[in-house]
Length: 297
Image (cartoon, rainbow, N blue to C red):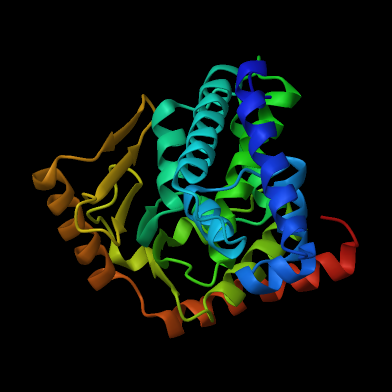
């Protein structure tokens, strides 16, 4: 939950957005159509159930014909204050590291996301059930159900970028182990593989797999993520996660370039997309059969 002092600017922002929409005579459905969103997303934003990103806020202000500079600056400040309060609250209450919170904040402005994973499906490509299983299974014993739900909600909110008209290009490389490991049971894994199969058909998504036959490779010391941004002034970002801590590098071009070369090497070793489709089909076939026979996950 957000801190009480952080909820005040968020409430003011949401009230203004709803009022300005109504002043323009627009329904939530019309806003959704104009923005390329679902109606549910507009409703969640106005109810405070989903945070509005800086980019989405600017687009809404333009749609609502808000041109007064002082008002725009005030609303942007409210968005920043609410987002900062939420990040601090999540970092304190949910066990999410500050680096991970910053990464999710940067997702909304990225034009390109390159993600390598060893043991799990990348977070942006996970189904809700798979994500819940991962977060629950890996949570420390002292974690509350509420903190687990907060982490799940954060992950699902991050996935909203996939539905935007200007969704970033995503190039994901996973070790074959990530596809073969049954997380959450047969049905959850079957649904996850089907989800990957569908995502792999999207023009902005590239999914590659490192087959076991590759042997040792450049990614065996852990997963990492590379983000690029539209504005040349925004330096590329590198995020690394390991058992001890999370590391985020924003102004370290030497290190970022090294991991960019590492990702390129992994892509050169990985199987092509067409092979990935065949592998997914092969992995899904026994899961389809087992779930049909047993009727249980």
